[in-house]
Each structure stands twice: as C-alpha cells, then as structure tokens.
Image 1 (tube, rainbow, N blue to C red):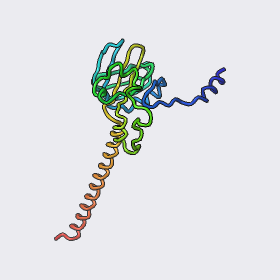
Image 2: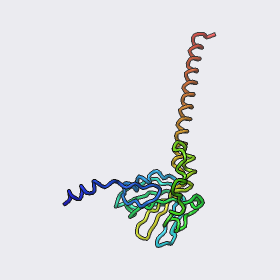
Image 3: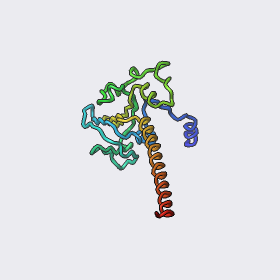
Image 4: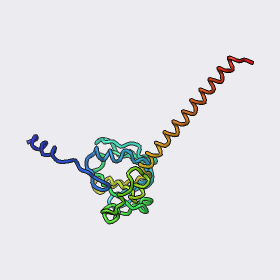
Length: 196
C-alpha cells in the first residue's frame, strides 16, 4: 500500500507558485522567508490587531518545540508555528502602510493579467522589472485565527545589485591600496640605494 502511494505521488509535479498562492510545505515557507530582511509586520488574533511595527528577520527555522518571537525590532520565525503561508501582492500605495484585510483575501483585480501585465520588461534590468510589477509581496503566516503579516521594506533585486556594486568598489579600493603599497616599497628601495 505504501509503495503504491509513493509511486502515485512521485508522478505529480511539484507546485509552481508565482507571486500569489498558498504554501503549506515548511521547507518552501523557510525558503521564502529567509531573505526578507527588513519588514513591516502586523499581528492579529481573531481580526483584532495585537501588535504592529517594523523589524528585521533575524532567523527562520523549523522546530515544533520552539516559539516564533517578535521583539526589539527582531523577528525569529518558526514555520512550525503556522499552518500555512499565503503569498500575495499588494499595490505600492498599500505597501507603505498596513494593508487592509480586503487586500489579503483576494488580489486578482489588483494584479494585471494578460499581454499588458508588465512582463515585457527586460529581465536584465531589475529596476525596470520591479517598477513594471508595481506591487509589493505580502507574506501572511496563518495559524487558525491568528495571522502574522509581513511586508518587505526592501527590494531583494536592488539589495543584490547594491551588494554587487559594493564588492566591486571594495575590490577597487584594495587594488589601489596594494598598488600604493607597492609604489611605497619601490620608493623605500630607491632611498636605500642612494642615501644622499
């Protein structure tokens, strides 16, 4: 019986979720949350806001014996604290403030579809791609009537590009320092050969 079930499931393709959907697999949830960085969070129970603010995702883990902790602008997220993660998109004007409940239930009308959906932008230009989408990701971690909603405050495409630019700038500074040190060494050798 087990082998029949395993062979049946091995023929099903893994899900493909693009910008919106429900994620129940804990590994997938960790993968989505681990590089969020700075976020705006909104925690509610039974539709009533308990806490909201801004913080930084310090750690994302999966352990049934540990808690999710949000304190001192730091978020330690345990995916085992939640039944599922709802991924959606919110318009830019709503991402600067806490999105209303209606923005998290259905966003199909807010997200463009079809040939004019903004997908024509060059995949090589992250700035154009981010601007063309015109929306921000929203991550809703749900456990029964409790929701922890996270809206990233930074764009991972821009952060990666900035990190790459910082590495290039650092390499240039190191090269300049090594070159200056080499010039200084050569100057010291010349001074030793000609003491007057």
